[in-house]
Image (tube, rainbow, N blue to C red; front, side, top):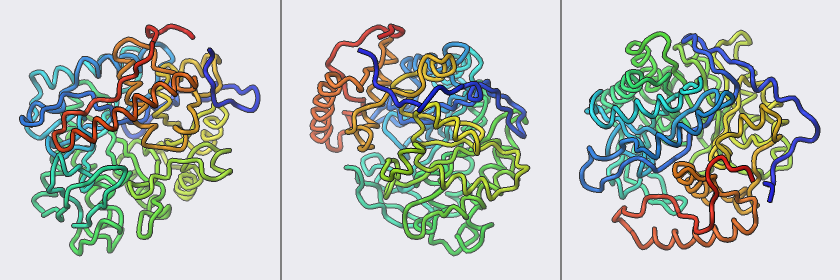
Length: 453
C-alpha cells in the first residue's frame, strides 16, 4: 500500500531546494540545499573490555553512507552520526571513535576512508560530526564524567549518567587537542569537513550554558569572551591545522527550554563570534536532555513543522545581514512546502529521521515524485524515544540491502511496536553488561532495497 505522507497544501516547485550552496571561507559547494542531519547509528564496532577495539566503522556503516550518497540528486551534505574523541566518553555505545592515539593507517583509518569514498561517489559532501558527551555519558560507559563544572545530570529517558567533575586546565587542553586530531584525521581520510556538536547539552554546550558552567576562571560565563573561549579555542586550533578548503561547521542550540539555559540572544552571540573565527555554517537546533523540545505541541509549530524555526529565525535575523556563514535549520521539517518556507530565512534544511525512513528523499522531492516525508503513526510523532529507536532499526535494514520498514502502514507498526517493547525488556535485563547494544530487529517481511511499493 502507498505510504502515508506529510503533504504540501498545493502544487509547489522544489527547485530552490536543488540550488547549489557555496560555503565561506572554505569555498566548497554543496550540490543542493539538503543536509542529512546527524543521527546516533550504533553501528560501529564495540568491545566491553578492549577500548582500542571500539568505534571502528563497519562494512554496514560504509553501505549506509553509500546509500545516502547514491544518485545525482542525493543529499547535498551528509553529516555523520557521532564521532567521539575518546574511547571511554561515548555519546552512544556503537559510535564511531577517533581517539588521540588513533593512527592514520590500519583498519580504523581504512574504514573511515571507505566511508568517505562511498558517501562522495555522486558529488555529496561528507562532514564528520565530532562529539564529546561530557556529563551526558552513561554511567555504564564511564562513571567519572568530565564537564565544565560538577553539575550532575539526573536520570533521563531511562538512562543514568556518570558523576561529572570540573575539567582541569590540562584536561581542557587535552580535549581541545582531541577535537583537532579528529579533524586532521578525517581530512586525511577524505572527508570534506567536520561539524562540532555544540548543542543538545553535550560537552561544548556545557561550557556555553549557565546551567552547567559554574566556573569562575577564564572558561566561566562571566563574559561573552569567557563563555565562548572553549569553543573558539577548538575552532582556532582546527583552522590552524587543516587546509583552507576544509569545511568547519557547528551544531548549535537556538534555545534551551530551562532556567539559565542558552537564550536566543546568547545563541546570536555565539554565531557572530563563530563567523569571525571562520566557521562555514551553523546547524541550528534546540533543546537538551532536560527538555528536548522535539515535539509539535503548539498549533503554530504544527503548521510551521520546524520545532525551533521561530527561535532560529530570531538568531539569524539579528545578525549582520551581510553574513557569509551559512545557516541550516534542523528539526521537524517534513513537507516540501515547509522546507521552501524555511529557505526564506535559512540557506539549507537538515533532516534526520526522514533520512532513515527514506534515504532517497531528496531525489524524490527534487524529481517531484513526492511532496513530503513518510508520516509515522502518532505514537512516533509524539514519543521521541520510540522514534529514535525506530530510526536505528531502519538504518540497520538499509545496511542489509532492504527497504526500511514503512511504519506509516498500521500493520507494520503494530508488529514492530511489539518487537520494540520486547527489545526494551531484553535491554533492561542486560543491566550493566552492555551486550545488548544493536537496534531492535523487525520480525516482519521486508523487500529488497530499491523496490518501489
